[in-house]
Amino acid sequence: MTRTHIGDLKEKIGQEVMICGWVDVRRDHGKLIFIDLRDASGKVQMVALPNHAEAHTATSAVRSEWVLEVTGKVNERPSRMINVDEPNGTVEIEILGIKVLNEANTPPFDVRSDGKEIGEESRLTHRYLDLRRPRMQKNIRNRSKATKFIRDEFTKRGFVEIETPLLSATTPEGSRDYVVPSRLDKGKFYSLPQSPQQYKQLLMVAGFEKYFQIARCMRDEDTRGDRQPEFTQLDMEMSFVAREEVMQVNEEILINLVQTLYPEKKIQEIPFPRISYKEAMEKYGVDKPDLRKDKEDPNLLAFEWVIDWPFFEKDEESGGWTFSHNPFSAPQPEHMTSLLAKKDIPNILTTQYDIVMNGNEIGGGSIRNHQPEALKAVFQIMGYDDERIERNFGHMLEALSAGAPPHGGIAWGFDRLMMLLENEPNIREVIAFAKTGEGRDLMMHAPSELDSKRLKELGISLTKGKS
Image 1 (cartoon, rainbow, N blue to C red):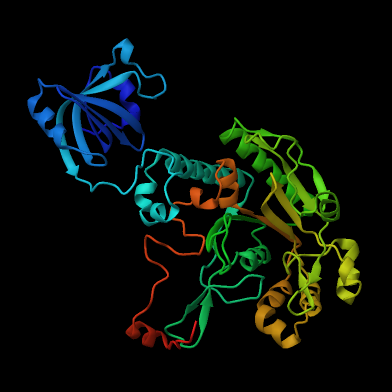
Image 2 (cartoon, rainbow, N blue to C red; image 1 turned 180 degrees about the vertical axis):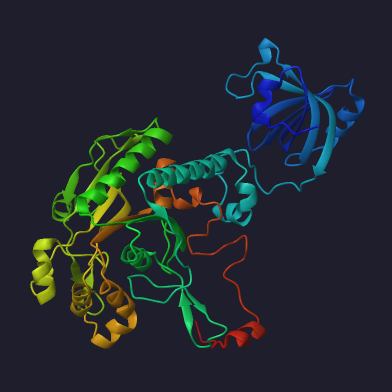
């Protein structure tokens, strides 16, 4: 007999079926034993009757989270037993036979609750169990729907999805890199990407014109509720565009995403309002203000674009200049002369644009410097000498000298966006296998030590100092 998914049982009334799944709950009423069985498509109530003696006996032994294969008859529930709050509340399985596919130890916590009453360390240690709870199933499945929706939206607009490397070279882009030792080239290291920034610009030089990627990014920085050591971006880039064109494409896709997948939510203002960095700081005291008119309404979404950012800001450690957002950004056209001359630095404005939702930055991008002398001037203002510029960015300068088109793009913090759309308090609730706030994987016990043989193979020796 072919397996029937529980979500399809309403179409099988009066038929004998075979279903598989996990025991959600078992209720023993003596002669009648009720079991709620769930699979990925839904949940159904089953009943073991005394006249099916073998099945009744087998059902007496099962416990929560056991994995079963059940043959049974799909019956309509009596009118007084109908549960209008359940998708399968009008049907019931009369158990004819039962096969235990796998027993289960008593779970360390209840997977039927929303999990918010359970300590996060326990949840992350047993994440494969935590993910069984309905709230987590909803979050991860909705994330999948959003990913597909975004892919379809960009694809129909002529964008090409291209994967970029995870092993690359370290470059100073603002955050600390994770590094990977090379076994074949001892003493040298790869760097895991903080973002695909340089690769996507190189794809514009290569002539693809429209690129996007659901990209994995890694940054070795202090974590918090809306950050993880590894995270996901929606990354995109376009050639022969100005700022407004990039913003328009992304605004359209965000609106379509919300209206299609989250129709219960209301976007406060369309088109999204624009606010300058200067106005945001003077009026609200933050560069990502929450513009909701009713902050008590979880289904009200207030988007805005924050524009006209200063290109440079003072580095607190060195006292010199550093970039406020991205060293690859272009200045606004009227400020290009100042950039090239390296004058009036505090007043140079960049083409940077951030997209903010309910006081959270969910994306940021810019038009890029597509001329090598302009990019070189950025690093010179930051105090880099010619040797360092060539060492870290010579490949980019050479590529931009090969006929680079004007181009620009943006990256969304996809985890953060999903967190907000699902009304969750942190991004760990929308990531299948999340790490703790300190960056530890409690389930896989990472980070972990390497044995001496592996360290020797990599050409690495460790010095243990006092903590």
